[in-house]
Figure 1 (cartoon, one colour):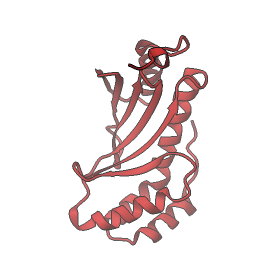
Figure 2: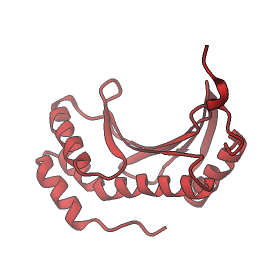
Figure 3: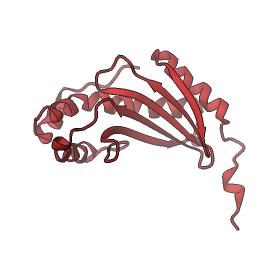
Figure 4: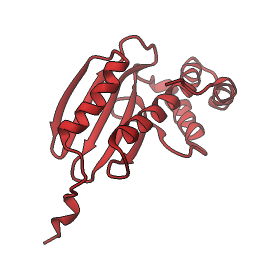
Length: 171
């Protein structure tokens, strides 16, 4: 019924090429990893054992759409009593972001910073590296706002404080 020509692109990376690139980053950060495939997706999950705010970093390559999703997953479940404040925090963080976002999962009660990119847009290492860095930078910039909001501070004040004191991560 449809034209499958959109699914194949001679410049599309293979799953092995994708895994090789994201594994380089995981090794650089000394993160243990596990990879798997799910339908048209190739996934690498890295545990961030030394971080107090984030539990894992996830790279997802959709081989059909030739896209990358990077996700920095929070370590703690959001208590129901802080859910409204956390949703406000998400809205305040996301307001005006030129890329990426902070999301909340109602089912798992966890938060995730996420960004995505087209993998056929340029060199694989540059796209993966840039998208990964953007997500890590968002996590670093707003980690204190998350902590402060979960400890009872008003989200507006927590975001203002994070934005005033944050510095870009050095790669």
